[in-house]
Image 1 (cartoon, helix red, strand yellow):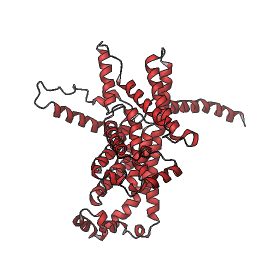
Image 2 (image 1 turned 45 degrees about the vertical axis):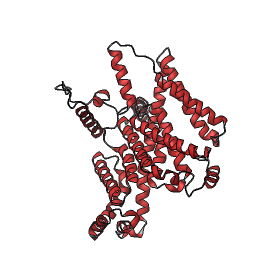
Image 3 (image 1 turned 180 degrees about the vertical axis):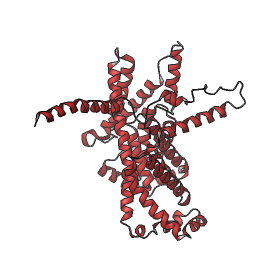
Length: 423
């Protein structure tokens, strides 16, 4: 190597170090995509909640002792695949009703963002308990909810648009006014109750250890981390332990967010490439056939109207394949990505109405939300906040004043000015 080459290498090394340092700071300095993860939390929790409420009259036939997938068959399957389901702890009707009610309650509280860390785990337990009890009751949308319920446990999805965020904001405002805030008693009480229940289930041998402890290690690990976070936040004498835990939490959150994005891309890529191999997708007639099945034709007149035009059927068939295959490659171009994202959301909305698959479509739309632009979500949140103010202030005087001239930002924008994706 010549002297000029060595000099060039030495000059490029500091530049590389600076880029590496900026990359590490970007990944660990903050939890990325707070609005995207909040939308995912709300979307999947609302989808699962609506599904449980709609199927409430049929709950025993789907997941309970009256279902076609009997208790003995479920026991044999669980013993083989080591999947987690609290419904296999007892075959009594009372226990089933308790688990189903807790699944509904945890979904509602998780959607609202109340004690998000604990509710994310309970939400995952509810999803896994019901779906793993009767594995043949689900479809593609249930599989997405199944995976996202696990991923959301590792995200900080309650930073915005949650009751947790509102409680913390009010506490900061009270401290800024010089008011004294009492200690949080609900959080430690909830942590203690969940720890007691987890200990009881462990001593009773209800949770399968499996490889490296399996779900037993996961649940106890999550419980211990939550306790450590509370102790460090309130007992640490210096800021370093809290900063360290915050960096680790940001790293875990950002990793989980990347996995969610990769999962969404993988779903569309595999679906698109498998469609290419089908002869009906190749000749442009694939969309015609499901629209003529009684199971997927809740509006037969609408289905007949859509399939009466052969050109429209061909365009929709080819367009679906093109959008699904091309979407993962458009993430590096903001404008093209947003166009295809709008097309996919519209497609799922049409599927919900025409094919009668509302919960599948809601699950996919919630997964697509991870790619929504932050600016759009902020505007959406601002409009929702103003609508809520107008709704609750109707008939009250004096009226709540609007934002000062020159400051048109929403509360979310003012608090998180540079957090999340810009595209």
